[in-house]
Length: 166
Length: 152
Image (cartoon, rainbow over all chains, first blue to last red):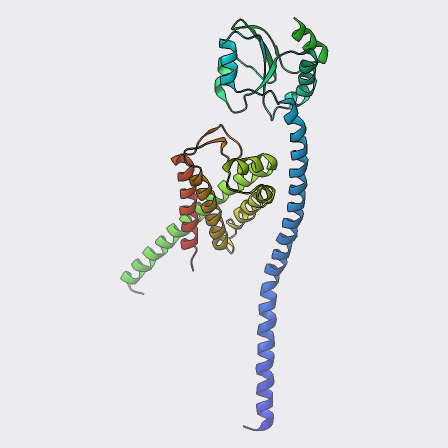
């Protein structure tokens, strides 16, 4: 084989190798692009989720203060059984009306020196049935082992004040 | 092609169809479970952090990073399970995640967790039992199934 033919053959082989490499790179492009997109989405998502976590943590710290006297349904039952004069504030952490009512009621109860005990009844069927709760928040006054009165739903500070004064 | 060859070919094809169908069923079921699980955690990340804390196996400094990273992994690899090209690697990660949850549950066997197992957000307080652990064993088996059936 002459030198010229050999050179031409080498060139063709080199060209073929170059084409194959270019085709392989082209094939990888969607994966590289996709991975970059996923990485960016993860970084951005992670940042927002982290901020969301911090906000929730701060909000929760403020809310927890209102529920510092929280008791379980069993503890409430004991109090009723012992004929204590108590107010049970049935609430659910996810309930929008409770989020409005709690900051009104709890400081008021503290100011008036009334024994208001929050009872979390989220995802617990028994208290709903036992105390015939129709919705949250529900504030029930128990005296001598019996229900005296109740407020169903959110309401104003004045209504809560009258209820606690009775 | 002879009649015998045709019969064998048709039998193999039908077997392949069943395997493909089964693989997709597994992938869709597992993806559905993990996408829902990610959603339930992402809508209330802070509570998920508290759920992780209730397991008592992570130091406080890791609660927030894990509360953010775990749902992201579930979301990412839940979607990955729906894409044939990434289903295998997603099945591996989902299997490892389920194994992590399984170990966490086993470490709390019989204890009353305040948010239940918390696999799909907070639930009623109850002791860790066979149902919780069995769920993760099932997910691991399903992930293994996807991994093996997706083998070329």
